[in-house]
Amino acid sequence: MAHLSRTYLAYCDCKRKTPDGAAMETMTIAAAFTAGDSDNLMVGRNGVFWDRQGNDWDATITKIIDNPISIRQAFFSPYKRAMRWIGDQLAKRAADADAAASTRAQAAAGKVIDEVAGGDIAPPPPAPKPKIDAGVIAALSVAAGFILGALGSMLNAFFGLGAWMPIGVVALILAISGPSMIIAFFKLRQRNLGPLLDANGWAVNAKAKINIPFGRSLTQIPKLPPGSHRDLTDPYADKHTGRNWTIAILIVLAVLFSMWYFGCVQKHLPDGFPKSGFVKNREAIAANREKADTLMARITKEVADKQILPAEKDMRDLEDLKADLPNYVDKIKDLRKAVDQLQEAATAP
Image (cartoon, rainbow, N blue to C red; front, side, top):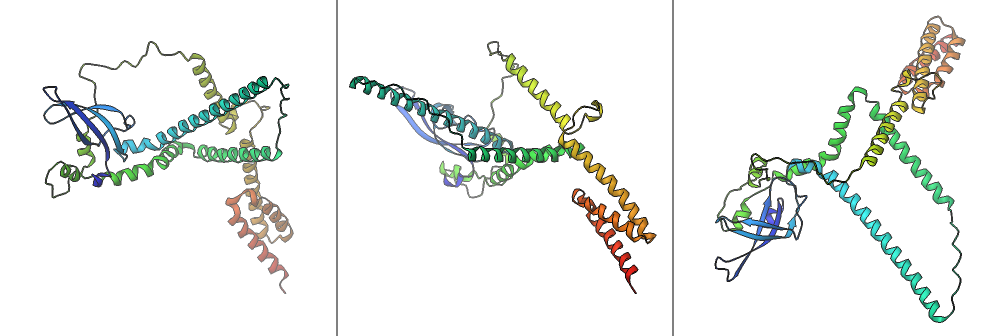
C-alpha cells in the first residue's frame, strides 16, 4: 500500500456476522477515494462496505492518507484550510480563557477557605490600577497604520483597474488557488491502481493509472433518487432578521463609503461636500500634470527662440513637479539637456 501514497486512502476495519450468526468475521480494507471531497471523512467515522458478493460490512475508518482527490477539491482547499485555522484559533483562545478563569476562581476560593479556617479574614485588596504602556500603544498604532496603508494600497490598485476589475478578481483567485490546483494536477497524474490490485492477489504487470475520468467512475458521489427533490427551507430555522439587516446596512455603508472615497460619485455631490484624500491627491496630480504640460510647451518655444533666462526659470518650476509626476521624468531630462545646451552655446567664445 505504500505505493498508493499519492491517492487519498482510508483504511477501514470491517466486521459482520456469519450467515449462521455464530461468529464474527473481520477484515481490513483500503478504500481509495478518487472523486468528491473528504470534508466529512475522519478517523473513527462509521460506514457500510459492500463486497463483490453483495454482503454488507460494518466499517470504521482507522487511518487516512490525505492527498488531493480532484482539481475541484484542490481549488477550494486553501479557503477551507484558512477557515479551519481560524476556527481552531478561536477554539484555542476560548479554551485558554476558560482555563485561566477557572484557575483564578479556584485560587480565590482556596484563599477565602484558608482565611476562614484561620479565623482571620483580611479585607479584599484594592483593585489594581490599569497600567498603560506607551510603548505598546505606539507599537499597536504603527501596526494599525501599516495594515491600513497596505489595505489602502491594495484597494487603490484594485479600483485603479477600471474595466479590468473582473480580470483582477480572477487573477486574485488564481493566485490563491492556483498553486494548490497545480500540485493536485501533478499528483493526480501519478495515481496508480496497480499496487492496490497487487495487494488483493492480482497479477498486474503494467501500470494501471487512475486518470481523472477513470477515478470519477470508481468513486460515485451519491445522488437523489429519481423523482425526489431537496427542500432547502427549514421551518424551524432561527430567525436572524436583526443580524441580516445589520449586515445589509453595513455592506451598503461600505459600498457608499468606497464610492465616495474613490470619487465615483464626486460629480453628483454638492460643491461644499468634503473630498476624500484619494480624490484630493488625484486632483492635485491632474493639476500638476496640466501645469507641467504648459511649462513643457513654453520651455520648448523658449529654447527655439533662444530665450535663456525665461527657459531656465520655467525649467526650475518644471523640475519642482518631477517628484509628483514620475511619467514625466524622461521628458524633463530631455528639456534640461536642451536648456543646458542653449546656455553652453550662449557662453561659448
